[in-house]
Image (cartoon, rainbow, N blue to C red; front, side, top):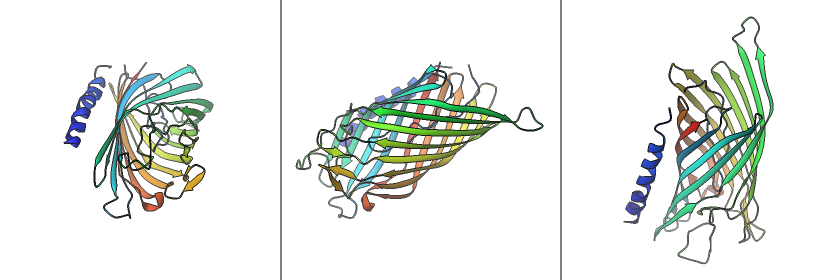
Length: 317
């Protein structure tokens, strides 16, 4: 009954998301895009439209995990995270872009004895990227063959707007500190993004680092480093354009700490494959991303991540 109730609550939001993607229709040439890491207490940008334009957007993303593996079926849990997120990009200066992400989350945790739900505002993220250089190289003998390079350096902050209420002594509470709307802490982000493009084909690499701080319950999530390597192809038509991309994503998380003591059953590594597509119709962009784990060792093998996916729409102005 509770699962049916949750689904009924999600249906109106899902249809609202789809409706919001309709009705903004002046096509422009596509540009390279940026992305950065994801995970618990983190965020994922994905491939964004029109590199040099402002936009506002809405997206729906989903991730699920099996946890407490190896302790027997009695202790195993299944966790599902659904997020409806408003996000934007602004250019206060031609070399500076500001990004913001405002998530609203629907979390479900199923144990052998009960099903628990959390719903509410997540942790808001604000970042800024600065253009270190942007160069074009004309290839010999052909004025149309231009090799483009771009490097951006950025950073930001994750606010503690999502609720964090975990009590390991409360048997009615959720089964781990990761199943929360937020981390309960202010965290800091840094990233470096490099893009290489020739005609309609490009390669993008980025590296991201997240520094976490201790929350009011003396819990400190481990710092995280992640990276992406993506190959993308753009095809322009008369009234619309398509960008397809594929690549890999890697992340490493350090151990969490409680009252200064290391929790050895946290942290780990994940390698995943990314596959996505964006459709551009005038100022409207529609996108979908599928991310599938290729290799993982999380929490000493006690956590298993399943495939993640997201859909999004943005309006450029």
